[in-house]
Length: 277
Image: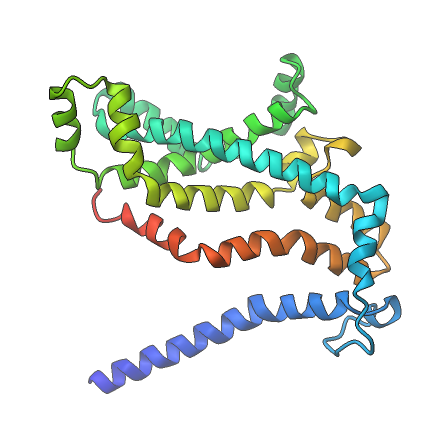
């Protein structure tokens, strides 16, 4: 019986690994191989190795549009950094209050927050509001949009992890004369490091790779983000797949490396809050 179960697990692992290989690894190899070809070779869209690796394709991508990809990286890094910072501060506090308080108002707020996971952003009304408050086409406005969109998921992660922290720690702090804010700042927040690492990585990858929201809410040549450059390159290099794939690799590799390095932290942080409800 055990042998049959072990064989099933082995077969399942092999199937899973093969699926991951063909779904994730093969497309990456395909892009890398074609990014190193000249235009004639790359347009064949084959997995054959290049006759002579064309590393200058990556240099040409950086030079295109007066180094627009460097501007895009700067904008994406600023957008990602400040959005993640706002999400960590706001969502940690919100998750703490929602988890600890059990009154009717908190339940209503929690329902509204969770509804944000299902309700998509309304493009035109959001643009109208941003124009009204003079935040349209500005970095602060784009940061607020990203924070608003990622808040429900981030609060959900913090709330789940918060349930694993014993409430007796807070009660002891209150007895010692701590205020609610100092309890959160000195006791609760330092204990949230595992889930904070998960939040930082997941939200950073999501915001850095966001395409549609910067396209709608942050238009303009000087406001390019890395994903929008891909949209521009598709029009400019529609017949030069080597340049197109080189751009895809340049904007994909940074977040891919970060994800691979911190993959275990992501899993630990997401599983930690699933012990208690």
